[in-house]
Length: 89
Image 1 (cartoon, one colour):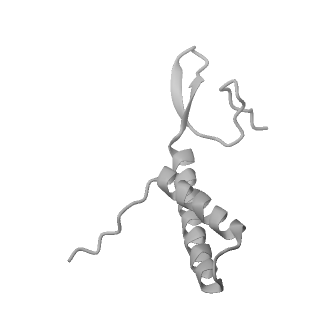
Image 2: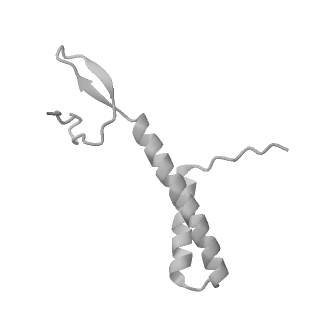
Image 3: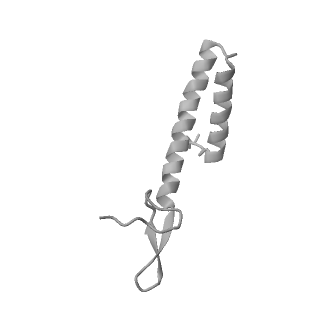
């Protein structure tokens, strides 16, 4: 039997996390049930964080070169909404 771990999509993990938070907030779970939900929530939060980091790395910002041509550049978290990157000093 294959031990492949099925990949969970970001949206699915986020929805599961939202449901877990609702379950924990409503306060009707047993202690054991709350602990299991909490553990699953930590896994889903970690997965969401990992997926967001991966997505950030894949984003590319188009920048104009001095010649007016567009070139792809790696995403920098310090970009402005106009699409221009901040100059480093």
